Length: 147
Image (tube, rainbow, N blue to C red; front, side, top):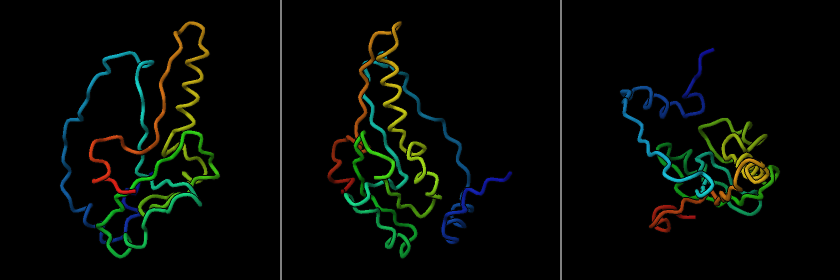
């Protein structure tokens, strides 16, 4: 089966990307320097997930008018979110799979399952990883990522 990476893009944008030269770069990698149980995690997603009725969806109207623009804002998603609370606003991916199971784009529930397993394993010291919201925790976030 052939995968069409450009299926969900507007034709002008798809043609732009198809015409770009492929650049092969080395993937940056930093090895973990402490035990996983001492790490903190933040999950980030560019899939357009938001909380229905509590947060505005991403601006698809402007993106339709300006195909090379992308909504730079973010939505903080709590770790106890339920599937039925999730909305997805994205023009360039098929959102039906995320609407059926948000964990394919933001694996909140899988992370919490791993945390529970780590705490219940008798052969392991209890792990204490915590999951932070999908909001990027970086300096200058107010200037670079408006809500």
